[in-house]
Image (cartoon, rainbow, N blue to C red):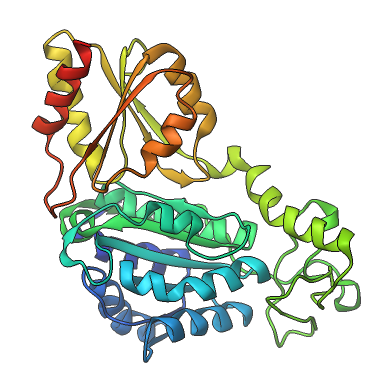
Length: 378
């Protein structure tokens, strides 16, 4: 059978991945550099009986997504930095109410309206800590168009499996570059679909955190009655002021993610086996890092790369393991230094240096190579 090979943009790949994953609802508001996602889905979703709505603003967009998800839809929104800032209250609500959804952030420079048409990686910490209160989050950083396609599918699976918002942090470079993508048959890809709980409605507890297992979210209107509130709540969903319930409910939001980190995390290692200098890079910057490492190897410098694909939860164990051997670590980022803080926390005493570019230009292989050479002589 002939392969379905397509040349497409990163934003287009996200839309196609969402469709293959079963996405049937999108609400959004156009914003550079993510607008192609809503443009494509606005025409594609209606052809399959889905819904795509341009809302009055980014706040309303995520609100509509959460309502659709509670009704059983596989729901998506897409934006960029300023729009994600506006969505933060609803991201916190989705975390507390355990509402699955996928949030695309095609990053650009900031703060405020910043650099609308230029790339950045400055929303990494916003993804983890943007909303108030204690919560866990899953965030993914693809580095190619092909990965944007497949990681979008994985994002929907993780959102449903762990009843949580999942963020995809791409950037203007990945969003607008074009690469080959092989579109698989749906039967050849793992896809988790919404389903009714396997218990009768009268026994259903939507927030059964004492069981240690994520309870499937019963779509509203299917006979499973429950309460949804952003207040701390018991297993029934109704608010509670009992201190033991408060403690358990808060802890559960962490535990369901961090106790399943082996299932959630995903990363790539490149020439790390004997690396004396470790480059920790993600997203589009990792593409330059890979070439720079090859250049360094040609010069006899033993460099390697660790690339987190799941950026949150951060892969502490893997970075700590590699840091014990590498001793010198370089973290190139299109921001003033964000992931470097996580690397330093896990560095085990290794020397850590950042390479930070925030002028809207990509970090080039030559820049990373020069930094590798410099720290190799220290």
